[in-house]
Amino acid sequence: MIIGTAQLIRIGVQFCSVIALSRLLSPQDFGLVGCVTPVITFVGLFQDLGYGQAIVQRREISQDQISFIFWITAALGILCASVAAALSPAVAWFFHDSRLVLLTLCASASLLFGSLAAVPSGLLNRRMNYRGLAFTDASAAALALTSAIVSALLGARYWSLIIAAIVANSFTAAGYWTFARWKPGRPTRKFLDKDIGLFGANLTGFTFVNYFSRNLDNVLIGRRLGTAALGYYDRAFKLLSFPIQHLNAPLHSVMTPLLSRVQDDKPRFRAMFLRAAGQLTLFVVPAMAALVSVSDDFVVLAFGQRWAPVSPIFFYLGIVGMVQPLSNATGWILIAQGRTDVMFRLGIVTSLITVGSFFCGLHFGGAVGLAAAYALVEAFLKAPIQYSVLHRVGPVTAGDLCGLEIPLLLSGGFTLATVTLVLRGILAMHGVSLILSAILISFGSAIFITAVRPQGREVLHETVMLFRRLLR
Image (cartoon, rainbow, N blue to C red):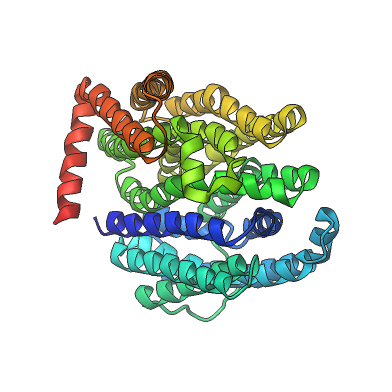
């Protein structure tokens, strides 16, 4: 409940950030930072080697092992920040913009803060100290938004985005350490046991290959089409990702330790996953379906008329947003059962599919074509492959996953058809009235189709209880 409340705050803050900064900054400003972000993200893949998750997943872990993990991740943070700083001239050369040298140098500081936060974050999750996690995350989001808006109003332009990232990461690290109340032991020459090493190596391998499916689109658009086109794509992607990230991340923090503790009780494991994933999809899929159906009006209302080119990109990325939440949630199953080896191999296959769609879509249709190709493979190739692999691993079956996803996708199709043919075509609605009507239709049809199945009625019952507790 604490995590849920904090995430509602973070979602609200992030939504305000997307809208406010889009009106204060230009597409070129977002495009410049979008050129730096893939580099920082790539180097950051190696800042903790998955050991933070190992602290959460392991049934037993000693103080000496945790201390060893801390000193390793701290050293990796310094190394990653140094590598990112050293790459700054290459980034400027690749994107043909000398301003990126100093931007990359400053952005690299976030890598050190991220490494320092890995162990206390893992300890807080292992102890299920959600109060500390929630307070820190919500406060960091609010401080980042405040610093970004103030900086932008003072004329910092694209620097306001870098300042916000540094503020958020430094405050998060400080907050986690405060609540963890843990001190590392002295550095030793002892090594981690084989299981922790393999767990971390496979998880890092998955993160490495998954990076390309999450960031290569920015690199390709920035390189071929320029910073303005990348700015439009960045805004569309932020609209897609902020509700997904800010719901999946806290659920990951909650569900991974919970599922790890019941990994030997397969029926209970399956039931817990389906309840959590059912509530996640019931909230996200109808919301994304509503926004997809009114993408033109929503983008203009949120960002202003100058951001109208975002609309067709967001339409296709919104389809990705309808499928991706459940696909992301399947990672809980593999991590909680220690099957990061399967996760790594699966990541290789799905990442290759996504990267191929980027090249094909960009070649034939620019940024809009890339988004369309991405949506196509996400729905018809990646999701079926993931569900098939999860079915073999168990205890959650492909039928369970399809039972959660397919009814809500049908509801989303009904919403799109109703909005296009009736609200727009016959009633000629537009603007705020159209958006509100689409949201009501989308959630109404989703609740109706969910209530038809017994499993769906259980999800609805738990959702109602959750909202009652939130209101209290």
